[in-house]
Length: 65
Image 1: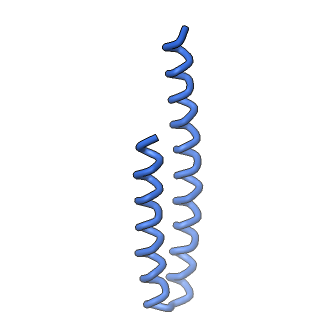
Image 2: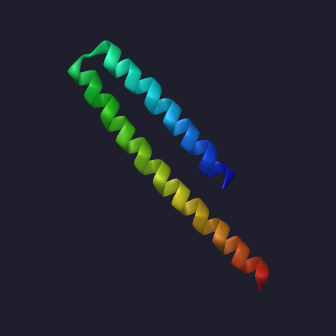
């Protein structure tokens, strides 16, 4: 659970930083790159968090047996 919290904080900080750069630079190609990388980051974070929760649940269920 700690990994999800710290990961979400890291994603939020990166998106704020990269989004701020995209707005301040204002060039369309850079904005597109930031948007695409942000989407890929969110997808990867979601998949990693989902996998981590599954492993955590499997570890709990195997220790109960």
